[in-house]
Length: 385
Image (cartoon, rainbow, N blue to C red; front, side, top):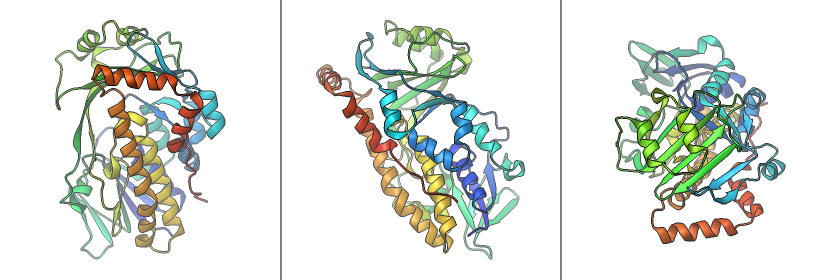
């Protein structure tokens, strides 16, 4: 099956969906409201399920070449003690690939390069999706109306399309955490590929890149919309006394490069990921907290599953029903697990609860930790041909 498709949103999920549709014979237009694609963002970790999805889309090798495998690292206390070490080699042996770290800008660029140059419509706001006209679906973008056989809403956690399809859904809510992050301006001397450090109500982590730079993130348990006049100075104050290389990572960062976003989520699950000829994908369908590093990976799973379902037919409606049946249970289960991981991780503040968690982590065998990770990473994509 093929036809014309409009993908609303040019982020990771939207571009991946466009690639999958293009590879299976669809004529695709990606509508992105940003007028200039400057590839803003920090870094991202990709697990085996996300990398396998990228392989099926034909861009896995390029992404791996630009990424750094996460073999050494783990979870620590603010004083530097280890709660759990990550056995990247064991995970690679189990699923065939290590977790990898890559700048988001690089991933975005590689995804765009896999699409025809003329399929991306930048600086266009998808204002309305109509299903009442002569064409199966129409997307209104200012003075332009795009007719399509399929619309894929990959327009993020604040999805306008989702609100129109499910007006009674409560929408995204604040998770209780806010995150500040950046990529260092210069290379930093790091002894690990990946680390998380859990304090009381706070987390600091980093992932290393091929060029020696690193992405770091700081997660704080604060009221929604809290902002700082000087974010970098505030982080230096809050993480004063935490172990190396945290001070070095902050010192290697330009103040203007720090991004600050509240962590919102779709805590109330959607009743469906598709209505008629409109499919929801990525954060528009199942925005989750980042505690398992699965947000982008689940969007990539969505993209491949959607393209495969549509390729199998027999109708768009039947394919979207199959997509919904396959993706909704898994992605919503991962979202619940991510929320629980946050509650047991950086959001813990009670000293006794923190001590109990730390003891349990230290006593957990590494093979048990690997099995827990495999619940989310061990996913095999459908074939696109």
